[in-house]
Length: 523
Picture: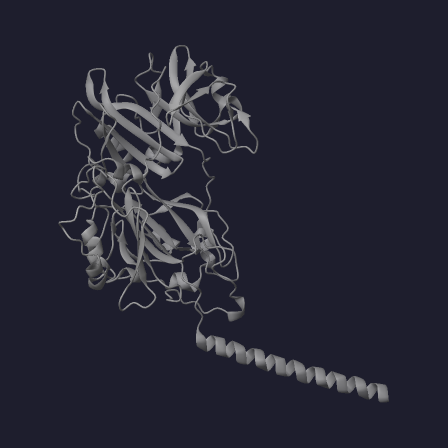
C-alpha cells in the first residue's frame, strides 16, 4: 500500500507556523532553473497538458475511472486514511458529495500500485467509480513500480538536471525535515543537494487544482532523484481558439496603450515591473501576449460589455498567473484579447514571478523596507520600540492578532493603508479611491451603467501585500486596478447639445403635424 502524502498547495499560514522557516537572500537567483524558464516553449515539453503514459498506455487528466478499469486497474479494498486527525474509510462504495475530493487511494493492477484521487463533478452524490479521476500519484514506496513517463521523459529516478531541462523554472520549491515534517523553507529556484534529514519538492502550479510536483530523495542507491510524482488536474484541456481573428475589432484604447518608462514613485501609480516588463495596471491583455505570455485557460471567454470575468490564465514558459479581465467596450461583448487585465499577483508559492514595485519592493523584501516604501509619514506611525517583545510570552502568537488599523496617506487624498494582523501573516492593504481615473474612454454617457456591480470584490483599486510573521518577509502580492469609466467632458457637452437639438426638432415636427391635422379637420 502506498504511503499517502496529501498533495496540496501549502497555505501561507504554514509559513508563519514554523519558526525554522527561512527565505533566501534573493527570491530570484540567476542560476539553476531561472536561466531556462524562457526556453520551455516547445510543445514536447508542455507540462500543463497533464498527459502521461502508464504501462505504455496514454492518459490525460481528468479522466473517467472506466478508462483505467477497462485496462485492468482497480481500487483496492477499504483503506483508512487520517485526515486532520480524523479517520476516514474509503472503498469502492464510498460516496462523494458534489464538489468533494477524495484523498489519494491505491489503485492496483498485476501487483503494481498507483495513487488515484477522485472528484465528484456532478450535481448529485456519487460513489467513487462514478466520479472523475483528477489526480495520479506514483512513488517508490510501492512494491512494484509500473512503467510511468511524463511528457518530456521524466519519471521515477530522473535527476534534477533532467527535470530542469524538460520543464524549466518551478512555481516554488518546498523543503521539509524528514524526521518531523517541519517546513524548512519555500523559495523559487533554490535547489540544493539535500542532507539525510531533508526532503525537497518542486511544484508547478497552473491553478489551485491544476498542479503537479516532483519529490526528491533516494532511489536505487541514487540520491537526489525523483522518488514521487503527483499530477493533479480537475479541468479538461481547452480546445484551441484562434483569438487573432478578434484583433480585427481592437478598440482604440488598446491600440494607444503605452506602458511606463519608469517604476512608479508611489503604489498609487500602479507602475511596476513584471517578469521583466514595465506595466501600468490595468494592462491590455494583448500587450502581455506581445511580451511573451500566452493563454493557458479562458482565451474564448465572452466578456460582456462593461463587466469583469474570471477564469483567464496566462502563462510564460511554465509560469502561470490567473487574472481578472474587464471589458471596457460598452457596445460589444469581447474575448480577453480585446480586454484589460485588471489584476496581477505574485507569491512564493506560485505564481513566483519576478515582480518589482516602487522603492524596490519585491517577494522576499523585508517588512521595514515595505513600510519605508509606503512613505515617510506612514513609516513614522510604524516605529516600534526595539526593546518590546512582539511575541506573547511562551507562545509563537504575534501580539495584536485579529486587530486592524487604518492610516490615511498624507498628500494622497482618499488613499489609506489598512494593516491587519493575522495569526500567520500581516496584510498591508494599500487602498485608493475609485474616483482616481487611469483609463479614459470617449464613450456615450448614456451607455454608462453601474460599472461596479459585477466586479469581484467591493474595492476596485487596491494592492495587498502579505508579510510572514516569522521572518518578516513579503510572501505574496495581489494588485487590482479596475477604474470607473471616464468620459470626455467635451464629448458629453456635444452629446447633450445634440440631444437637445433633436428634442427641439421633434417638438417642432410634432407641432406642425398637429397643426396640419387640425387644418384637415376644419376643412
